[in-house]
Length: 157
Image (tube, rainbow, N blue to C red):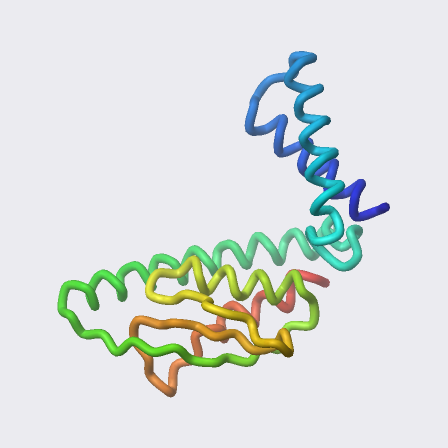
């Protein structure tokens, strides 16, 4: 029930922010949509304990994580663009074992890898710890997920 409540509240706040309206019909539509989505997806959303989302340490660490992701994005855009221009690519699908404890942080790492240009999370292994990643430039000494993994562990404090 707590995950439903937290999911509903965050979805409804998001609805208000995106619509920018406080008229009665918009609020009613927002409540309806938020209840339906929270009911369907509430058990899959956010953290194992919904109160961890409101922990100030978690929020600060998530903001830091967003800056780390932005840094990785910019760096990866430049690298991918130069590889496309020069044609210097060495594509491969690699297996990386993640050391994340929660489903949220595993998903955060997998999605962050997919968001950066030149990499794509293709599959999560049956043991839910292995990520299969297609990368545009494979080198055995480069760990794609290291930066994300280090900061993702701190998001759930």
